[in-house]
Length: 456
Image 1 (cartoon, one colour):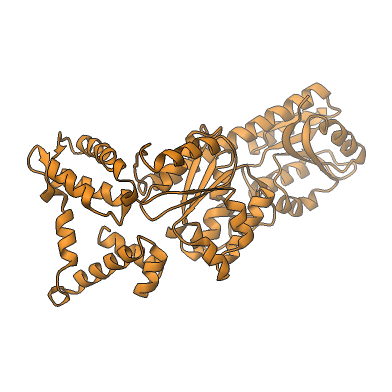
Image 2: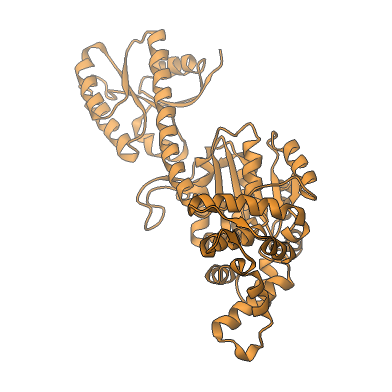
């Protein structure tokens, strides 16, 4: 019979009881730890993640009141009210056991125990534990997903040109658990590729967690990725699971992996090697099962040479490497993307617009430094601004943008100057944020803020 993957702690001052419980429970459950004194509880709970705690009611010879068991039950639940506690009690203490159930115990077993009843009780307790964990995880995941959805973009993939070979590779690697590194300029659709890989994998029914490392401050990196314990820092008012724990069983997508600080690169490498995470403020390790996808537009190999990115981590995250072509290299896909976004925004804004021939010609002629993301924004704006039944070249505003770049510098105000310089830097470096930021004398985060301000 396959053992349940439960981690059980048994506390009793009777050594014979401990030996008997351990020998019996080890046949049905993965891990059994025994302890002869509840005074060791704090240390044990700080170092381990127990699914069920079996707790005796009495610990002094000649004392059968059960008050010690009630005291230690309340102590355990004060540490974490979600602990599953099964009490061990003698026949004469059933009334007290009922009182303990009211105080928060999950169930109780009578000593000497009936083997079948004991195993049934422990199995039910473990199912309750896993059910509670799944519910808590689902609630937290839903909260994270709702936040992430507002930052997402809806892209469509085409099988024209360069994309055909890329999509063939995606279909090959998606069903595996291989770590994948997705490379490409900003706006090329790295997130949609990651979602497509997840949907084609055996984890499709589980969580897909998108983590934008570029939007996290250094102070939030560790707590967001790995979680934290209550009291780990000033605002840590409760235990919180990190992104890795929340998507255990599913896929985690680390966007902008090049932004990960060196000290957290070491921790991420440890997580990937050991498949465990340790929450901030804790010492115990928690097992995870995730499929890792990463993305960046930064030159990771150059960063390795400069000592800014760990070489061993790079090898770990790019078992398979996918490189997305910029939109200017996949002109055949542009009409397909235009129609996709047009249909979406026609529905959103309750319109029935089409795209005129002159507008499509202008779209095809433009070099799209912001790639698919820029095209999406242009089509949305055109749908909003169009007054007739067709989107015209004037509605898409591409020509105006190109002319603005040619305006003499002495005719620009400060904001126009800033916008012009950012556009030129992005064009020069083909959308590479790191290189553009360096040339402009800005941090990546500062450049992102300005791009958002000017809708670039």
